[in-house]
Image: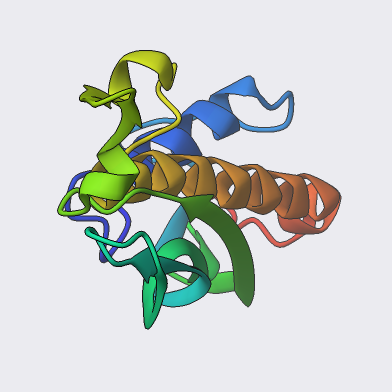
Length: 169
């Protein structure tokens, strides 16, 4: 299991990508090599904002509300031979993803006026309007997938070098 991956989402995506590769096979027990993978950091930065409107007059207020984030993921990876000797690494990987979201507490984000009647925007959103938590969860899965692909690509480039450093059986 990847250290720091509490839900196992990244671990599963990394295994899937290793399995898809023509260079590697995943074995849950004693393979020729083992990976030590750590999530060493995840940072979230607010990068998009929208202004609040005053509910009564519709005037724009000076209050800004976040509406878009950028997540950065940092991974450390080392490869060990079957006798516990580090043969490659440590490698450091970084990946970013951006996503937007609506403020679930904002009437303006979740509805609009049609004449004098308020209607929900969610029925027309086709899934694009999500609150911060579901938007972050979906983006994180995509972020994990991107960095898992990057890791397998790096390991594939070092495949021959890896085999030349394999401990004797």
